[in-house]
Image (cartoon, rainbow, N blue to C red; front, side, top):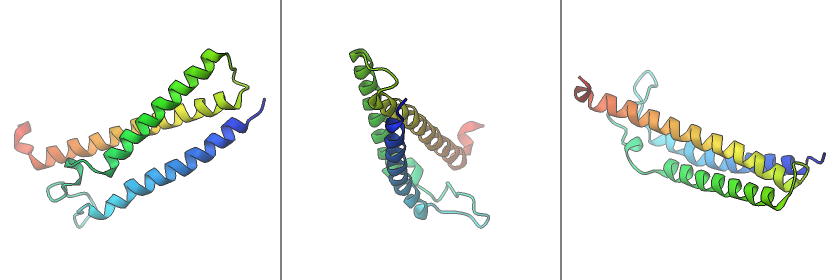
Length: 124
């Protein structure tokens, strides 16, 4: 069984994942932290605005959907797991769907923690 699809897909995941993580990670300098190193949500507005992180999540979700549609197209055409194209689309679909989901959940956790710290009287 040829593994060229998996290898090419792994390279693409490493490159795109590094670019996406670099863009998201560069936003850390805008985060205000207290003296213990925890995020001070009362002074950090970053999580309550549309940021590069949200844009990356949308781009990754669109890319995931395109990979799933590509996988479906080639499966309907009759290709099998031995095809490098099928291997590529399977790997990309799984990895970027998982990455997109984890980034979205992480973003939502930060937003909810920020809401809880900024407006605690709303939850009593």
